[in-house]
Image (cartoon, rainbow, N blue to C red; front, side):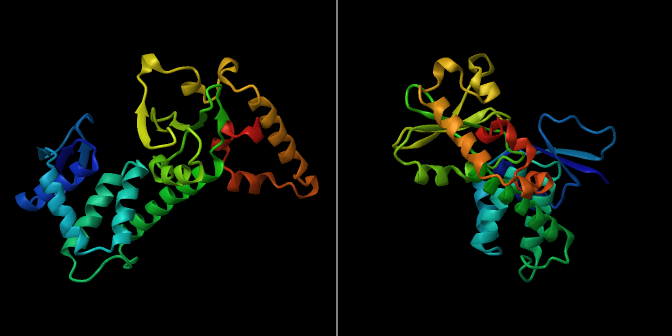
Length: 257
């Protein structure tokens, strides 16, 4: 049989799908986003209607089976945005609920191992964001940074930047996903811009000359000079550099311009 559940691609929708599966006693072979086309052959399609109460009941059930740490990992894995993310998390949660003993360290299970590796990929992206975000100072005093992470890890680093730059207004914008976070020295809020309202710097990641603070270019040149000065040519290892500083981040790194 090929049973398909269609849902709205939200985490609450995934939890609702798990609730409905147990209620119907029918478990999906495939989870599809509502907008995704159906395959040529299937036996049954069930449309999941996201319900916050159902999602909360499932979450409370998981709290009895999984540690707080793994529950956090579960939510962070949702940000992986990989093709098999919904189905892997669905199977993992189902196994956690059905198991007589905890499954968290049962790495002999393929889904438990895959879940652990997926979380590590998301967490590694979180670490890289904290390392490679580069701000540009705008004329109004706001610090702007553009990012294009492979995983949707931006929400995981916002607390870090709010604590580190508490006395500065800043905007970190994910160009790939079209949203960001703005901090006004008081609170952080999520911001989005429609395609018709997206300024050039929200596309390229670089502030236009008319928007850049008068001293910003000087600071960029100083940083580039410092980066070159500390580089020991005899120990230059491009392969190691690309491993520690992935090329996909270079586009927005001041020292790589």
